[in-house]
Length: 112
Length: 115
Image (cartoon, rainbow over all chains, first blue to last red; front, side):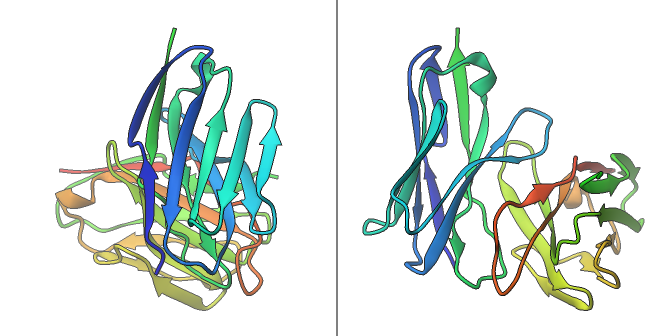
């Protein structure tokens, strides 16, 4: 099965600065790379995803980059705001797999 | 379109009691799954299903049963509740055709406390 690791486990940044969270996976057959955001007391929700034939995808202040050779993908948040404070999970998916395993999560805190 | 609906939202059980967490989705998703999330922890897969009549175990299946008699419903049964099963439970669903097609949609969660 897929081994998934997220780094760092906690991240604290000043409002307005950038944040980067990295997700490392083990299976080279992975072909779909989503990031989920979970605000305190809420359900996880998809915020951005990328497929294996694309190297980078942006959506306003968030972006995801993929390095298939090194088997990792990263979430980038620029101009961070208080509402970005949450736990972020990666969940790389192996083509044809039936199990979806999440990384252990990264708690991001934005300091005013 | 309600998405994924879980009931109950809160439940307190005594050790040894049994109960069923209900999950229903109205998006005609083939894939449904149950996760548990302990305080400050990640999401761990309990059981999943890729279609009616098909279920399989995830990472932490012990103490839980599931069934999938219809596309819409995927109940999770706790057979004999233990304090270690105190957690928040999330049901999630997705399109699935030989593999994941995209986003996993989550219910609001069910907070279970076992005394």
